[in-house]
Length: 185
Image (cartoon, rainbow, N blue to C red):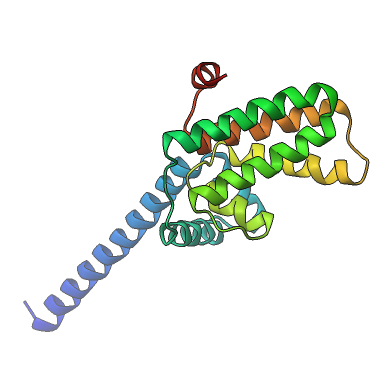
């Protein structure tokens, strides 16, 4: 067989293998990001308008968060935050607006204690989406309610929903369950 033909066949096979590996890697990366980020993946794809761009955004989030010095909270600090949350919940009965503002502040304090940088809301939400992709949507809804509340555009039911959403992220950040809250209260 002519050496040129053999060389062409070898090059063609090598190109096919490289293309196959690239396609497999890209598809595998997409599947991993979809699984890891869940609804946040869909939100970012919708926002970016292109899955490839969205995956780059999510990968960049992962890189950013991996460089942070995040820590778990010691039990005493976790208990202190849970007591503060119990107080905020009780405050809701008499002062829903004040309680929601305190819940927002408390969640921010816990994030700060865990090592998340205190930047603009959008950056904080992006950062926590890496470890809490199922809960970050709740955080965004609660934050939106706080913003509407500041403009006088929220109802008591909206504020109640914000409390529930803040609570879900608060629990995730502390790594606690409803049972843990009852034990501390």
